[in-house]
Length: 559
Ligand SMILES: O=P(O)(O)OC[C@H]1O[C@](O)(CO)[C@@H](O)[C@@H]1O
Image (tube, rainbow, N blue to C red):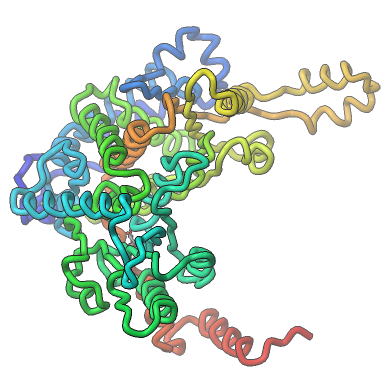
């Protein structure tokens, strides 16, 4: 691809430039041969053939370690994947991304969240506004954290509630949970409300004092139904709690680039923090959408968070493919999806602080790559984004890990493991548990071993024969382990940027636009049409459900 500076015609470039779907590239058939060979081999066997596998399939970057040695892959297959990336012109894609080419060609936008972390230039026409809004965000944070910002009654603000959804919630919420020190409440405390279900807002307000509460309405578009409904409910709560004569506007700020819509709601322009159009919602935590995070952790920790991501950006842009962590991670995921037929990716962070990591990644991966239309308008004949889900270790070990052990599916697993300092006993136990799980899920337990363990417990031969098959665990579940030195701002920034770029690598090779979300837009249109009461235009099931719900509202029949 020829890299054009902020081309205004990238739709045409994307459509007319030669594009070959990945399954037509010659590396694809080579990979199919490798897959036929590797599908018959267990991961544990791969270690028998290559004792140095951990050393050759583990990759480091600034203290972070990415271990791919427990994937069903070997060096020749990985080399073929790297060939595939070359044939798909991934290096051109990376260069185009950082150069501000309009890779989001369906919306004619650049994709430059890396500019927010200082890893590349913002478009010159936006640079001054960007610097100004970042500066204002810092000043606002300092005023809030120092207790000098007061509400309408003169009381200092002690509680900040972020009202946002999707990318305007998941990133800041996840990162704040991860980085606000254990046992300490941030000053002011920061809470997050996303759901239009009033219960979430009510919970956040349960012990709140209107006079010392500030709402951040985080909505790039200032048009998202859930966020606006919560903002209106918050305003009503403030009006009732502050009393006559007090201006609720002093208890609101907005992060949005729809300043007119924010002003119409009652938030004046000087209390609105804009963000550039080239920052997509799911990539926006680095922008002013990160305001609640900055308030929770302070500006210098936020800088460390940006620095971690910037370090990963620089690595992604410059490291050769066979040392490049996002490239390798992306290729390993593509291998699982398209060559091993694995449909889901379970995220297993071994840290309570990362309890919302899977939710953040779900949006990042599934909203970015849950698509089928290729750059040339044709439909993908291979699978794209896996189904991403997960939950924290060790909690999941006592619940859904059962399916990994004895279910009928192969599931790809990502263990995210902060190691922490030597004297951190509880973290040591988490680390050991993570390693035990990935090892047991790789090796499994065969029938002979199950039999032997039952005999050793003193069971009669006939009893052991009945029970042993129920103890068999096939193992061979492929996993990636990411080790972080600690769950700190730098490492979290690195980790999130690693996943962002992984998603780019996969989307680029699959040939889809990872940066639009026309699918979710269809759901929004349907919701608008339902709430406008046009049920008669819907399918018979939906019309029936609407009628049943209406009848239930009037007279619930519990007989
Ligand atoms: O910040 P906004 O405009 O309220 O959008 C919130 C979220 O809604 C979406 O547009 C999808 O509905 C996401 O992409 C975005 O992160």
